[in-house]
Image (cartoon, rainbow, N blue to C red):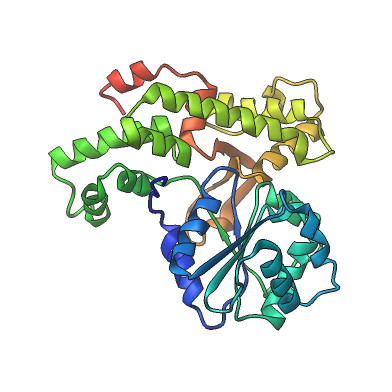
Length: 331
């Protein structure tokens, strides 16, 4: 059985499962950040686990056309997949739900008509499906976003839980002792190079093979690029790829459209950038003068820096010299 590395979201999911007035849960985030794995881990707290993959089971899409009630849907699903779906005892998981927009629309009715069932949904490229739906249950569905491993989670996976606890307890008034600080810096260097994509972290924790981690990162980048054609029809996949590369190359400072190595016009580049943000691959950071609280009172929407969701992906796409990075004493 594949080893599970604990995540901060585990407690959030467990707390959700214990709520009395519980809404169906939509777990959102970029591809490959560990959504399905976290949900399967939550299933360990249930007697039964009913997992429906809407990519694989297109034969059941008809159940969500509005003909059947949530109770009837569960009864029919139970027969089809041969798993009991019982309130309080079964975790019902709709995976790749973006493949069945009708199922997204039906989530709200589970809260209204069958709230006792534990229902959680997730999917890759889910944000694009949600964008096309005018409303999918505001106030009746709870959304939680998931991201790659944080530095704290990376330390947990590496077996450095005591170091993670020491960092959390440190402060300017009570700093880390130098030896522990140096250990933290060494781990931070590794984290910056590897990033927090679960497959990479898991491989590194197995045998510390940095070259193998680089191979996994390269494959992840290739899979993300393969997805570009599935995003939207508004902009060509090649344009999205050019912007994806340019975000890495521009690095610090304001993102400048005319520095993108592409023959597309400004509007196409802007749309491509918004598409990457929607996919969760790129995060926008908006400038603020920050003269007081709230910070948002003095933001400058025209000055935005774009950063990758993961530093491992960033160093891999730029083909950085990792030996030079590890050899340097200057972080």
